[in-house]
Length: 343
Image 1: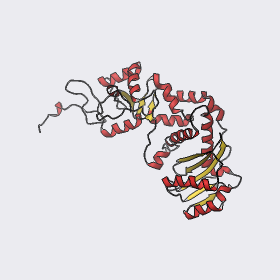
Image 2: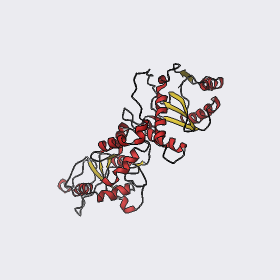
Image 3: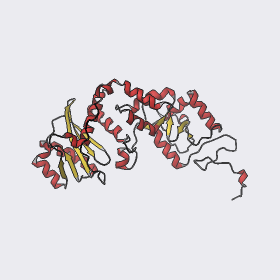
Image 4: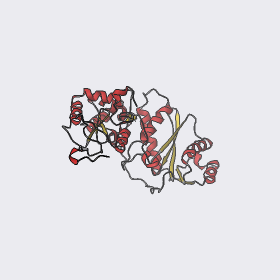
């Protein structure tokens, strides 16, 4: 060990203990492992065939404003802790700064399952940024013909509000939708986290088929304490009551003629129908459409700014949106441009 006088020790940036410049007087940026992990998690959630960490790094160099910003950050002419560089990509906080040429693709991905203005903005605030992004989101949604065709009128009355459960999957709300686009859908929602489970079937549901679907769901999540449903024969049958009783599940029924009292399931059914109508021109199987809708809903922030996945699983789940973030190749300074492959 050798003693080094303090004036010979290079300054460190505000986010890490790595030196801001090396002996060759070139500036390099190293992030603490924890900060690096957070940023990697951010860039790796918006992905299309066009938008990846590699394409963002490349187009950042071709974007006059971002290229200039990146150069000034590297040269130390801008020392704003809000901005960092990782794998040739500029980040503002935890959000990836998107070059102008890729913004249209990012907007398409944010709107893929026809999220509304509020949900799109909440999603964007977790992953990406450019000046005027909120206005671009508003213009996109307002100009979307499919969204306009399925937009519903605002609620006119306030309905019964259930008590908030203490635990996830303590109380679940269930309902059937269909026939709709030649399919039936069983929709089950966790009352606390709003985590959705949706199953697609071709034939009209029966008590026996409903029990089979619930057994599949419960094999993953465990048994709920309370199951809320309407008064349909399916849920009133002897076999279904026996199924609930033998599994210690308390059945609760909504007021006859008032489906809004099962509003949690009703809202998700209406949302599902709206999304499917808006995606009717997308040429993929129905089951795939439902998977896309459910996956996107699970990572969309709720009013408390947490996603159903974060509330239910206690973590973020990766989606295609994650591919816009730089991938950690082992060193914080590794560039996707150098490796030639994507996340």
